[in-house]
Amino acid sequence: MRHATHAPRTLHAPRHDFRLRHGADRAPAANIAAAPAGASPLRALQIGRGLAAVGVVLFHLNNSLWGVDKYFPHAFSPLLGFGNAGVQFFFVLSGFIIAHIHAADVGMPERVRRFAAKRLVRVYPTYWVVLAALLAALFAAPALGTVGERDLGHIVASVLLLPVQREPVLSVAWTLQHEVLFYLVFAVCILNARIGVTLFIGWQLACLVHTLAGGGDSALRVVLSANNLLFMFGIAAAYLHRTWRCPAPGLVAVAGALVFLGTGAHQVLAAQPWPADAAILAFGLSSAIAILGACSFERAHGLRAPRVLDAIGDASYSIYLVHLPLLSVYAKALFATGLAMLLPQPVTLVVMLAALIGSGLLFSRIVEMPLIALLSARRRLQHSAA
Image (cartoon, rainbow, N blue to C red; front, side):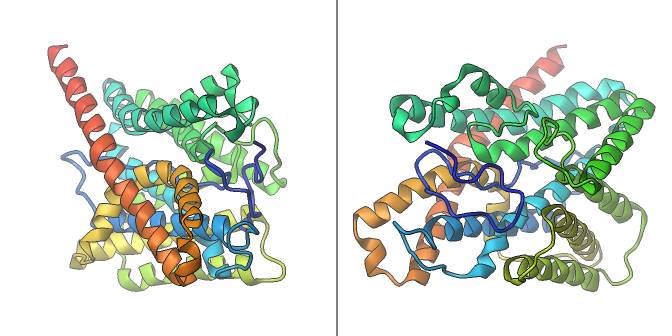
């Protein structure tokens, strides 16, 4: 099965034939981290994760079911077309979280093992479960995929999340390639502050030069992507949160959110939207401003929000990993049973959204969280034994 969209670089992602494999539109990266004793947990981050996850699911629903001849030929709403900007929010959030939690580890080489173990446990095991299920489906029913997806070299690169030009078998895992690259650079900072910071600054400058030069689909596309600059935005926001008292945090948070939404509306409605990399940077900068404002507001006044957003935030990684394959399954069932023709389209959207998020919540409860708890307990036992 041929990809209809290969790692799209714009928010105007083309419609695709959505089949069991996974779809090609990008989804958010994993960036969940448990706060140690020295870093206070921030509910604003959980809420932001939940909202970003909902936005990405809405984007894929809109892009996969509406405006597609075999499903709903007419578009539902163009304003759902920038929900994939939740990806940029997640990258900024990842930089913020790592800096917020692990800033004190920089230059402390004895802490690198703990950092690496936490990151590995957080990213790989749950991802491998979903990837294994997908590969099993592709080998059991070859018509669902392509020969290249069953290529051993491609599978190995996907399993390890190597920053290669070709996107992983589970295409949404492209974001994890960036995450793992960021974690590796940060690990060098922990091992040696001078070398690590020099490496990080050099990497960021190389990404900036590559972006200003027009980017391109080169072999270094992942390593030099504009998306990598967003980690720096998150780190800067975390530094400001720690060292500066924002005078009007509510206004700052609202301003960041409005710029984010305004950028998205411009990208999907304007006759001549900004180039993809410019939009990435705009989404990233506005995300950093919103995160800084929201966290500063929470520090000053506390924060209240529906608890369901906390739950969705906790399960955002599972939602990210499973919602595309399940969207294919649920869509086929929806139309095979004729239910799609009986329900008003807005109701169909809500039902599908609830089903996908609910499935992610369930997967998180029965797979992700027990798996992380088991591996974390084993890691602690090994550490105590050593």
